Length: 118
Image 1 (tube, rainbow, N blue to C red):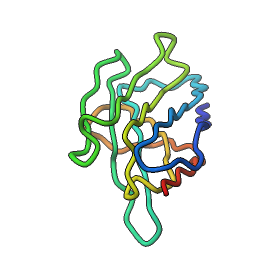
Image 2 (image 1 turned 120 degrees about the vertical axis):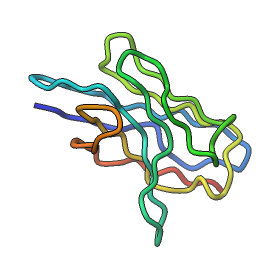
Image 3 (image 1 turned 90 degrees about the horizontal axis):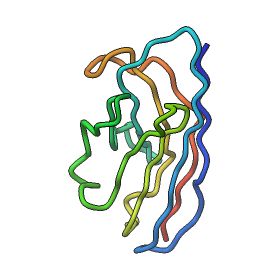
Image 4 (image 1 turned 90 degrees about the vertical axis):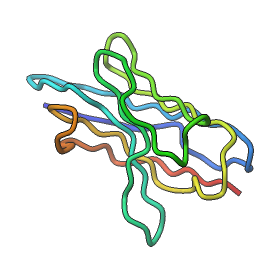
């Protein structure tokens, strides 16, 4: 059983900050990687950041490097995305997701949380 629930989205002015959270309930499932993805209206979903479940980030999209930090609670029950210096093009629905192995497909997804930058 896997359940992912995102929170922390909202409306913010350009240059502002938001911290997204993903509460993870994982039973009977082994996961090597978790990640944050986003999808803007009319655009394909894209990966924002990924992290080994051991706690080491493995990927940041070029567009967010230096502005966004992914982290994982030591209990592995919460995934975070600290977003700073937000830009208009960060506006999207943000999803957290879980993969059995890093580099493989993400099998489980949350319902998403909306981030709007104006």
